[in-house]
Amino acid sequence: MTATLTNSRDAALLERARHVIPNGMWGHMATRAIAPGYPQFFSRADGCRVWDVDGNEFIDFMCAWGPNVLGYHHPEVQAAALEQLRVVDCGNGPTERVVELAELLTGTLDNADWCLFQKNGTDATTASVTIARAGTGKRKVIMAKGAYHGAVPWCSPSVVGVTEADRAHLMTFEWGDIAGLEAVVAEAGDDLAAIILTAYRHDVGRDQEMPTEAFLRAARAACDRSGAMLILDDVRAGFRLDVRGSWARYGVKPDLATYSKSIANGWPLACVAGSDRARDGADKIFTTGSFWYGAVAMAAALTTVRILRDTDAIAHTEAMGLRLRAGLDEVAKRNGFRLRQTGPAQMPVVLVDGDVDLRIGNALCAAALRHGVFLHPKHNMFLCAAHGPAEIDRAIEAVDAAFGDIIAAGFVPA
View 1 (cartoon, rainbow, N blue to C red):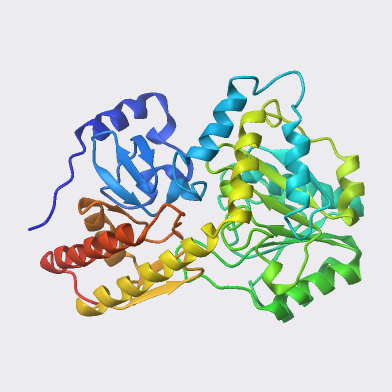
View 2: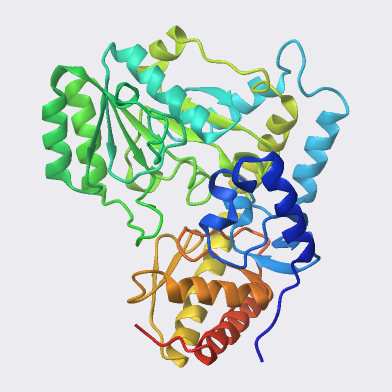
């Protein structure tokens, strides 16, 4: 029998929100952009679980869209943050936490000789582009088509309210296409300031693609030849694949790398980490924010990064991702469907093969919600260190039941 989900309080809150918030909610957390049946408002979270305002409990595979890397309310991170909160967060200047964190990161990240801190990923990517332009004295920035680097005019996936002038010096190519990259580098000529790339291809609604070493080395060589800066946008993947930076395994060092999401296990913080080659540009620019120097998030980050560096949290999360991947494949085949699971196991995209319009995926994820598991039908998901074998196995059982529900509703393999 199909499970049901109580959502009366959520619906009432959304109706109230429509009067005071444009569209009732904005940005990537607006559930109208996901699929029908998703709760919009939540009341609490703990470990790898979240509860919506109606009291429905879910095993969470979005992890706050990435920030929850160790588990909600991780005791050591919470203790460090609360201890700092008792003293000062925002003051007339930063605390010594800013120096301690910069020292920790420059000793951990493989490209970092210095750090600047912000509050979210868009702050960091925008600052990195500004630093590259200031340091090189050039204007053109190359990015991959469909890549996400934030939600401001120079890079937003939406062009509503954006002018041609906002993107006058932005150039694109197809991710992973070395010849295409070389062609656009040649087109930029003597005016190339930077090439900015995500850690791997994670465009929404499509299979993910890990970079090849040859592709990254081609980007590095192009920057070396032209004097441009190579920027790693590690906002989404940073501290989930490798604590040294997501390209460390390839032996390719960016001039600038940007971090946010997982850096402080949910406390608001972002970072630009740069090499000495990019220091001149960082010295020249003016970038700031009233809350960017807050010490509480920095205290949380100090603990988070140390835990990720000194424990097997990343390896454990990957192992749980592989367990989930195998289990989902098995239940899909048992029910006559095939899945395409791509990207890192700890940051999976799960698509139903042949489901071009996402009707099957939307129905499957909505059914999984009713069985207590929060998945996403087209965005990459996130696992955290609090996911254990019991939670993974329970999630697989829920998806098996969800397949049964959509089959009963008339869905068949494409």
